[in-house]
Each structure stands twice: as C-alpha cells, then as structure tokens.
Image (tube, rainbow, N blue to C red):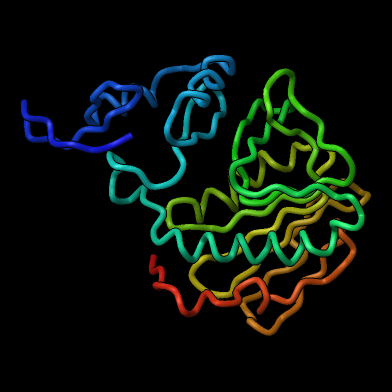
Amino acid sequence: SRAKNDPANGEKSVVLFGKSLNLADMTAILKKYYTPEEYLEREWEATYKSEYFGGELRPLGDFPGRLPGEWSGFPTRHNAIRGNLSYEIGRRVRKNGYPCFSADQRLFIPENGFFGYPDFLLFRGSPAIYGDDDAVMNPVLVAEVRSRSTFGYDGTEKLRRYQDIPALREYLLLDCRKPGVQLWRKPESGLWALVTETDQPDGELFLESVGFPLQIADLYAGVDDLPPVIF
C-alpha cells in the first residue's frame, strides 16, 4: 500500500489492491465481518499482514493510514530483539531437529479460530499444517516482542488465545523498550502460571520447552545502540 493526498477533501488515503481508500474506507473494511476463507484470501493479496479473530481483522505493523496511537514505534529495536531470540534459540535446537520460525509464519488455533503472526515459534517435531494453507498449529513455545501498539494486548487477549493451543508449553514476552521479560508456563497440571518476571539485564531465563537457559543480556545485545522507544 502507499499513501497520497485525496484531492477531493485533502485527507490522506491509502492505495490497497489498486484502489484509493481514505481512513473512513479503511474503518469500514475493518468493521466488516470476514469468514476465515475471506480472511485467508485477503492475506494472500494484501501488502500488510492482519490477525483474524471472531470475524474481525487487526492490521499489524506500521503503514500509511494508521492512526497515531496505533503505530508500534521504532521497529529496529523490535526486530533486533526478535533476531537475538531467534539466534540464541535456533543455534542450539538445530541439532535436535526442532523447527523454529520468526515473524512471517502464520499461526492458526482451531480451538478458538485465531489466525496470527507471532514473533517467534518453536516446534518439537514437524509442524502441523492447517489444510491447504501454510498456517501452523502446534508450537510448544511462542514469543512476542511487545511494542507500543501491542503491549497490553500481548499480555491479555493474545495470552488467552495462545493458552488454547494444546501443544503449547510456554509463552515468552519481551519488552522492546528495555530489558523486561515475562514467561508463562503450562505444567503437567494444565494450569497456566506466570513463572518468571524480571527487568534485570544480567538475569537468566530457563525455558523448559527447550531444556536450557537464556541470558537476558544476550536477548538485548546491541539494542542500546538503537533509537529509544518511549510509551
């Protein structure tokens, strides 16, 4: 998509699928009820990704036409933390044959109908694929880097949706502003609990889903040199 000024009323518009849309048009699109099939068809054509739940879309990322409060902020810090996490886990699980994906991999949760794009997904064994789509369904670890537009959402609504994944054992949340980690875990009892919450940059985080610890400093390596995020 790309932004331009609407000569009719001076408003900024967005070009989507070759059609110029102003903010009112975008709002109407988001309020429309979509079936899962309609959502997936849109995702294959859209120039930005969206989550899907209960017939509604939630656009992801920063693009022209979003309201100021919806912008996630500086993506460099978000991407650096996500990259560090992918490297620190990926290099150690490769020998075990544990597939892991980052950012652009679509997840589907049949138990509640949610489609989304977690920042990081880890599997023990082959990923289960949803139908003819490329969405995966059975991660044991999901991680999100919390940005300005998703900070509360990642720790509440999205947490509850992820908890419906039968295979999931851990959900990791990383603050993009500064070292800050939350780890939720589902033990054998099946009752989810917050087992780690720390803002200590020299702390350690043990992941039962992979069987080894992570140094929080490694997850935030190089981030201090990037533009700060304030919200």
